[in-house]
Picture 1 (cartoon, one colour):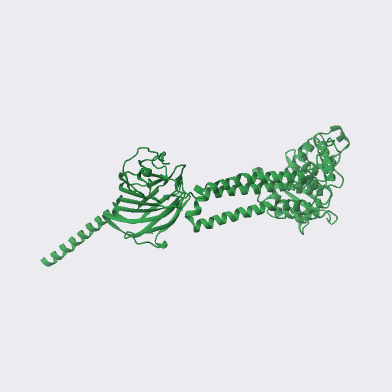
Picture 2: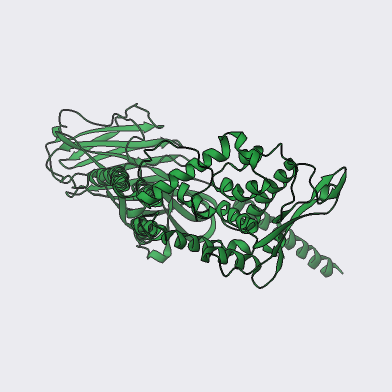
Length: 589
């Protein structure tokens, strides 16, 4: 019995010890902290104006850790290259043993190591990289202005040491230096530096708080370092900026001169006089094209009304539903064969009816818009048969718009090239993002300028200008000519000229002129209107008919477009702490 009790006691004790031990281990893992025990920075300045930076960071770790990282700031630099990473024993790591990425204007390096729990233990790593465009060049001296200890960190640096190796030996009196330790912009200087020999300067600092820099400044006489041809991208920046500014201006000037010489319509010298009918044998669609040199759904709608007025089809308005759920639908009935019509008019008839004799506007939804481009092409071809334009409108526009396509392609290739090079040489090309964007915007603006002018390159001939003059006179008649002339007319006049009023943009004013007329039944259009509180087929007045037709043109336009995508004498460092290149962030996790 005693032995059983003893075994039970031992088991309970072991369980408690195991539980307490596990709890303590978990607590140790959760309660993690660290600080930089030592950061050593070695800077070797080369005669080609680059310099190599080696950073060895030693952490004091408590708790669970599995990676170190360092973010290198690229501000005030051309780029960095030749990045190398070394583990705690100084062994160089292969590229697949650490991660390299871009974070805004920084290059991020992360080394993952086997995660474990540390108990106030030291662990270090080192990174090495080459800096391009990080030196300053002045009349009498050259300068290194470097944020050797980065500011973006959450913990202090207990001790820091920076060694700078100059490219040549100089008299010590000709080597000058400054040291700033503090927040961004701090101009409080430290005297923690010494000139070790004729080409080596040492800086140091203690207990550098979070968000504080250690910024060094060293100057030496000119001649030891060759100023690079592309110093700080000055020539590249100047070249790209010049191209970006000059290219759109040049393109605009050239296309404007070309348009003025070849695309500008002849000026209408004659006074616009009211014309009481449209030019002979000129369909409404071509009338609209002569006015604004473009085809839109309004021109197609006007052609449908014109075909109805001429007896090729009939339009019947119907009201569906009841109360608040009422809606209008239009029934198109084919009345006669279209073989004697112009090709573009035949195409419109076939696009509406296909092989049917009757269709509704609901049948045309999400279908008719697919055929609009073919109808537009047929109208342009019809215009090409006349003597009104200097050539085929679509061909002229495509020809003059071709350079814009080339520029768009060039912009895409530049983007693709920059993207590929940035992925391959990320530390080199990622820094040119601003220049790239400026050039891309310039190219896109230039292409848009060309496209805009290309649209207006088709010009009217002398004959076309004469017909346009007559059209403008007819527009004058439709909207403001003397009213007494209508006394001899009927609503047939209204229907006959309505398609032209529509393409000329004066359909409402044309309808207003018939407001005093009593209703006359029309063969081409049957409205559904309300008379004496009931629904009937006889409008109470012309205004009802006018309103109904206006509703039709608006509704049918929406139907037809539905789904269509619309020096030695001094030392630099005037900026104080954080004013140089380098810096960034770092930490452990």
